[in-house]
Image (cartoon, rainbow, N blue to C red; front, side):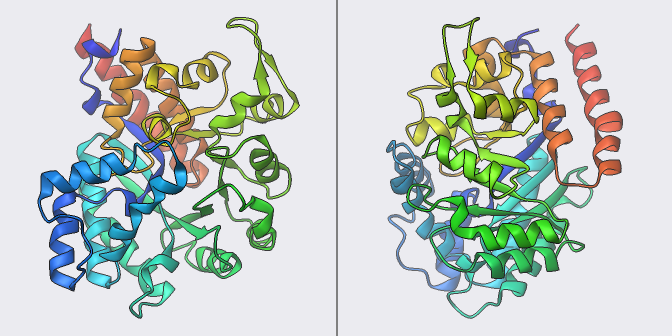
Length: 357
């Protein structure tokens, strides 16, 4: 059953890699800028602003891609603004069929006008709670530290402090080249000692050394993007040879938080059809599908599914496979993951099959 025969919006989805400051509604950016006096937007026309963000995300360079975040972070310097953004994020994800999400944010980016890190966390948690109420969506925070800064241990301590109040993991984000994971080794060792979870942006704009450090030095349980693992795979289709690192990642079932549309925008590959997700799925890596930044990439989980269906002929079996992969890989407690798989995801896909029969 191919994607053209499916209502992909209705399919249950699990999202592990989505940035809060990359998923604002364009109208909200404009309204918050007016409300809180942010004067640097390139335009106050909603359609033009959406196009501006999307153009900025298609410059085939991660550093240039990240420049657009100055405006979304610029309007997220007040508690009410952060809570609204988190609320709308949950509403939008639920409307797109997402049943479980881990949304990440670097709280340090929202403290320029006096908010404390804990106030930022509280605003996010409150917004997610109100936005998801009654929708069937479960949503948690992943607390990110900026890899270009020197506050990662402080942010790791913040994440652990909020572990029973809505935060399920720690991450580092931002420009990858020149800022290796081992620069933040003390933060990751702290997370490990606290029996907490870590995912690491690695293998997006930089290659195998970043992935190797994330896994072998920093204890990454998941790889944020991780798409450059293909640099360790050689050979023709059907007879691929895995290098030592690629084999280790596959053997250990380390999840890849793949973000196809975003990867096209940052120059990983020229099109969705050229994205290595098709090969990685065929080779049975722990593939998950994600949005990364819904505003910048003008995408959604349904859009990612639809594009993968069009490019690779994926259908309901493939979408269920990546969804269960993601739920298995989530940082929620095991009983919660199992319950969602058995009582939400599998029944949802069974109903979709029956409806399309």
